[in-house]
Length: 190
Image (cartoon, rainbow, N blue to C red; front, side):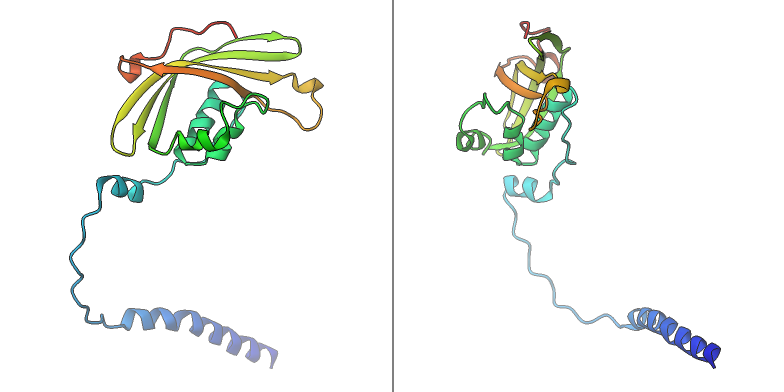
């Protein structure tokens, strides 16, 4: 009797899974009314609506990775995360002004030169030459170049809370060169 009960239950479960599939296939298409004419979407809304944000990146393992993560946050419009890459004792400006500075930015691309590092007083410092291409929501493109300075306190002597590699400051200026040729040869020593 237990086997009969098992067979009956199995058949019932199987029919529940198969019957809806057949029912869906057997449905006749319903009559539809013609779709209303599409309204053109303004260019800046169309780009925003169809553009998916880049994949999340948060890597503070070296200067280039940190700056890629910073601009990843900007591209994803995660301004609080971008702001967090700055050293807590040297933010670039108050957060509301920082966020407002990116209101018209659609995307930012980055190219890097060779970072130069040195150690001093229990910390490591780097200067990272770079160029960025900023594309505005209105389609405008502006290229900047310059250097970011970064710092990492020796992890072996840090306490709690741990302070990861952080941006101390950055100096970027508008470049007249094409993006690919705008990365500076080097930066001043950190």
